Length: 125
Image (tube, rainbow, N blue to C red; front, side, top):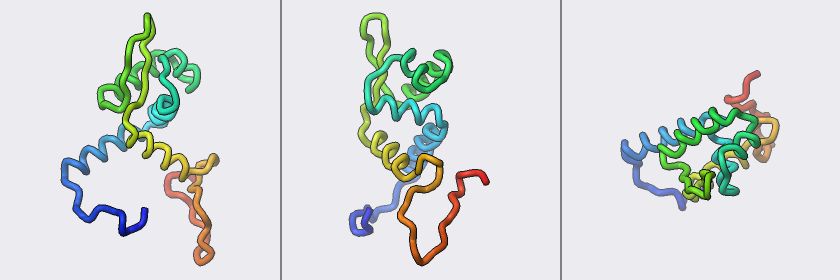
């Protein structure tokens, strides 16, 4: 984001705490995967479990946490409960972060010819 378009006001303590809590919630790769899938299509827990390779019970538990935090919502469709992500801001944060990470887990950025390539801090050696 260009510096001129960044807000100048300092974030409040409440904003910082809420942002940190949201990042903490999304710091679990399984939940992040669910959010990514649900940003693309409304889906039931069985399908989500199959797509993530997790057990249905574990997927349901992760969905409950995301729902309690207001990140996902659900609706009944007959006997199925369908989940979705409604918040475009959450979707944008997840998509921007994943666009910044290469498939091998390294930072996907244009190399700076003035500096040697750097190893991401979050990838184990």
